[in-house]
Picture 1 (cartoon, helix red, strand yellow):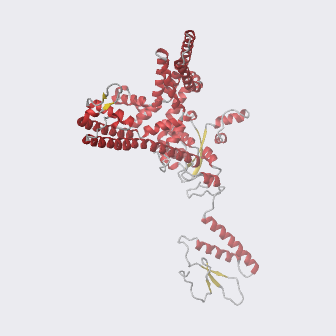
Picture 2 (cartoon, rainbow, N blue to C red):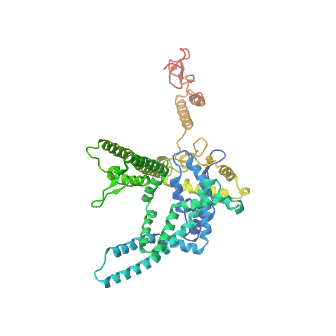
Picture 3 (cartoon, one colour):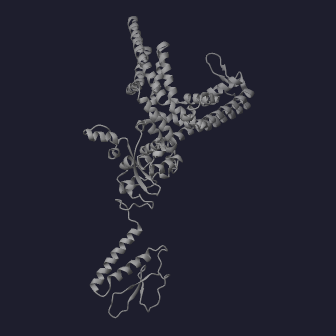
Length: 568
């Protein structure tokens, strides 16, 4: 079962025993954890059945919404979202037990796509009916009859599809989103609130729940589409044009465009309010100074006065001034003799154009464009992180491809982020008296929301098993400096023994001991120092034994001057 779970096998395929192993293997989770000794350890566990019911939509939300720039923040958010995701999986398990819900979910894609398809077809019929009129009344009657039959048939299907999609979303997703917003506002979870009697509920809690239910944009859109279907059948088929807005649910690009407007909605709203205040001040100046010059030409009829009151002056300045880009579009031109009127118009119109049109409107447009650019850059950065960095350990694709089994294999089988989520869920729902050694260690970390049991920049496949960062005996591990010195000492000992056998005058054991002590001086805790001299006992004709520095190879005879460590 562990092997089947490692490869993500599912039920079925390849014979009875093999199919059973694969079916059981999908409930076996595999993770690498940092144990109490600080070493990496691969563990296996039997995850709860409902862990496989996490929806793809929730997975995408977590992957794209988590903070990947702050170190350690993504693992902390995985802790914070684990309770919410657990509640969703349990909710999906309860729904999956209903045969009616299973039947509805099988037809959900059809109903979801049918809304937009019917909207396009209905509006083609509406355009044809209200744009072409036959010459003969008999043909007109047939056209109207065909239009009524088509509108009624497609309208009924549209109503059924909209109501079905609305009910699915209301039951499946809306409660989770509402409770998420409620927890952000009050700091209280759904389990805590639902366990209380209604007599202990605060009145503000009902208002908060109602607010977050109405603030769900997708829920509001689906409700509007269902209501428009009813109006289209009972009032006028023109109401079916509202269903074309369903294209927003089908296009991620359009959702990003709306997000660019709403993400900085507060800044845009405050800038717009400031702009309206400036326009009101211009209206006050115009109304107090020259209200009679604000007229709109209506040739051949009489001109229409535009500033009969302060309120009308403000509305016309807001409407005509912003749409035309020039508040002077509804002001009478000054005559050559009226120098004062000309100066007033010049300063008034130019300042309106510079302050309102050039500065304030461009600020609002700049906020929207900058937000859209930031969203695009953020989207590219998140996508690059997902494709090239492990969510759990943070190792990059190059390291895992060159020193490990490959990035794709690593994030799918070794450090699968959903396996770690399943591990957290498994430990939270298991009886504390039944936990084994590693489970008690990790459960204590999970209870404290301590992410130290996650492997940080370590993986067994790249030699990060031990606490010092190296795993003895692991394939592909890079030898440490101590291991290299040990190998070098063994090689030098073998060479010394070979030379002793050739010369026949030196003891191999003595040469081996001196060679090993020489390397021990080189790798001492104090660092390299020119104070370790070894004696070469190999006889040379007419020469005394030589003392040689084991670091710089400088030598002297026993009777010669001492070697200075400071000498280059």
